[in-house]
Figure 1 (cartoon, rainbow, N blue to C red):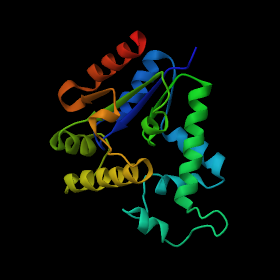
Figure 2: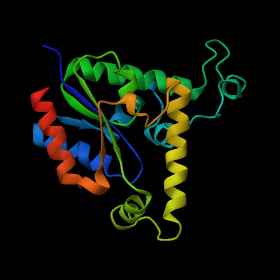
Figure 3: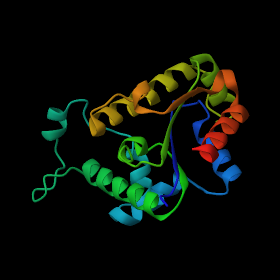
Figure 4: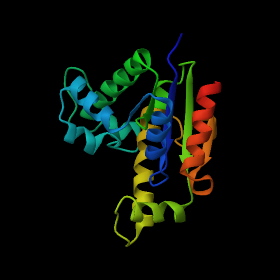
Length: 199
């Protein structure tokens, strides 16, 4: 029997990471978020700090800009970001083969797009609710939280588009999209845990 996987893509400040961890706790399975950084570091040989700073960065918005960028290996033609992507992909595919789990971010929904027993989730919320959350829960500065949200979402969108050639947040990439600002964290957890058990 195939392992059951939940992938969670999320807007910054929507509580997607919290939802992922609580769903995993409820189901008695692992949630991989920051833990993925350690595994990618081990696979790639790069430091956790280096990967953490670059894991959602597309060096350039266009494939041409990335192709012409400096820092490519002369033998393989791969940039460091390409190298991280391949390590990330390998780690996520291996996790899916190894155990049932929740995977937060890292384009896991795309990487596991052909994996039959995978529930692909997108968590979003209004700008107002997310701004409130990143100040109260994340400890962000109260000055211009909206700018921080827009910048972070823009980076995620560009990274996702570059490596997947699809649109981050587009409905047909996911099985379900939940508005955590309207439903609340606990209700989102209830819905996803229920879907996991009945899938």
